[in-house]
Length: 455
Ligand code: NDP
Image 1 (cartoon, rainbow, N blue to C red):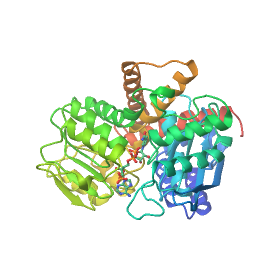
Image 2: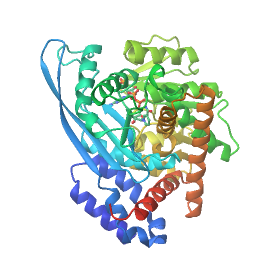
Image 3: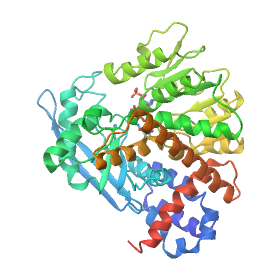
Image 4: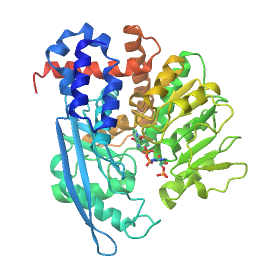
């Protein structure tokens, strides 16, 4: 490995020893940059890597709120403003008990490269809280009520609003932060700042949201995969696909895959995985969306004829034959053993919808097998790209049609695919989207940082 990369990796490990997810993400990117670092000595001379692994700003704050029983609860809120070289910070908010500094720094670091890949002017950030909307603090087995979620969101925004703005930092949703939460936070921002701007994306359609934004990450993941297939002269027609997760990304990926003639046979959530050997119908996908977004229930509640629900497992080792896999739930959810199973059962394409869902040994197995493997930072960038389109519509005070936004999303996913493909080929790694996406995303940000001097 290049000495400069080696030194930065060693330093970052020493400085952030208790942040495993962040270190995993940094390692994954830096170890692929050798050729581009060697060819561009100005990056070392300007300490670009040292600066990229250090957030521009980390904001951490108390979020006090009152539950339905009148008891005061306290959560921790965060915003990581990672890199603003090519645009205002942009990235989602995640509400989950697993949220901590390490997880958010990993997500913010990935977001820098992802946003750069979209071709739009957006820097990288990420935030959230350890608040769990899926567990009421006072009644085991029950979710927080809408009123509790609203009070939490209002308190969260009461601090966050000082640090964000349409030209500074534009948060969006992520895990457990959907239309409901964005609506409550937008309302509170507007009230505090006394201005109506596109400060959050993923808004409702009646107040500045963009058509296709809810669908964008899942659809974009599938569009990216279509581009990979096209390179081999293939389509999705008749292909058996396994999907993990049952949330926003998973359900819209399923919807698009079925539209393209694929057979979608699994979903998963915290309760387990559902396997439908004959493939799901669009009506069943809609039922899952209703279950998750309206009823806020579990896959274990589904009573589908011919389907098998397996408690406590993920989707990977259920089907006898797999053509393509779409990890769409969370980080590190697909390990080396899962990768071996998928490869043995015919899988030739893995399109990551989630952020960093494959563990390093799984990635190594996919790369070694030379299958079509797209890392999340490239293939799930459709969500943030459409957020960028929402920002443009808000600035122009215009709304584009569904067809217009979908066409732009398709174009962006093709551009991301082609940039990653070409960057990999340029540095002698043809077909390796991991290397291609990292190099293409990195170069644009690094060049902007060099041009802007030491800041
Ligand atoms: P959702 O909250 O809508 O869905 C997440 C899904 O993952 C749910 O089905 C959830 O199960 C499941 N899940 C989460 N944690 C676990 C766990 N510990 N064990 C088993 N299942 C789990 O989130 P999104 O669909 O929005 O996001 C999914 C992934 O995609 C995340 O990695 C996110 O960062 C990434 N992403 C999302 C974007 C977006 O636009 N939404 C954009 C780019 C990336 P349950 O329903 O039981 O909670």
